[in-house]
Image (cartoon, rainbow, N blue to C red; front, side, top):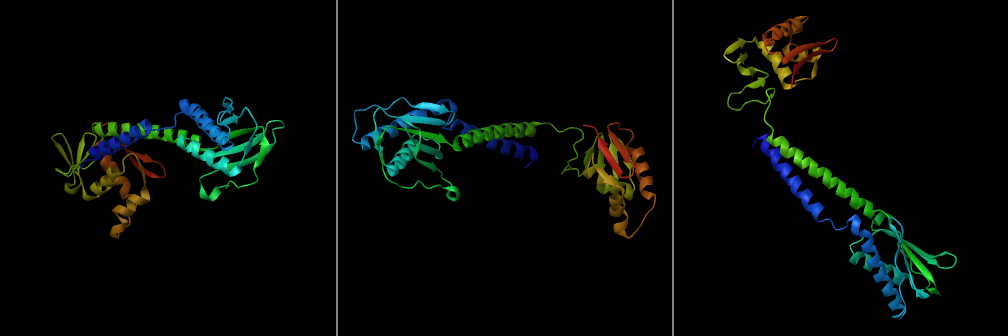
Length: 288
């Protein structure tokens, strides 16, 4: 299977998954406040029923901050902490709302906190709501502030958009045509393309159109190193060690001589340059 086909397949998989997750996202910023208000009214109704009160009203739910909401009642009521925890959790879950939030029960007159709990689903950081004495009949307001799940959902949406973009790029990459500087070996002819040249390392030769240029064994070995790493600086020590020292031979200026010969044989193609990086090594520059 070619690299192009692999890019297209991976790109299609990422694109389909991203579109599916984005289209199936349930918590949208536009409808979040409406869902919270419905859920808190449901919780308020259950608290009143627990007080055997089926006639008094629940006041309109107020949005105090972007993620903080207030539930209040027309008449005083008694609040049992355990019941409050269960009722809120059930109402928020039924509305598919985030499951991490800070709840405070405030006295209407002095706004003192009568009871609070921090609901978390991470086992390591849970602050378990503790049962306590029932809060005596009084005027209370209940605030709920969502902590981090909404932000996590928004961040997740952003990542899916990034992945969707990546999927499109992979598909586009798969359809790109090969350029003349493509150095991929041909399985049929066992050669590499360098600009306008065809390089046959096993036959020690360069071919440009109908012209064949013979290479010595050392020239071929050196050129093969550059072709494998185009546009990359290759140190002199690495070249000499690979071509000469590994064969038990130590050379002086031989490398410069072979580089000079290769330059002459490649000079007919202006898109290819074998340049000297002073004090470091050489680089085969191929224009894109």
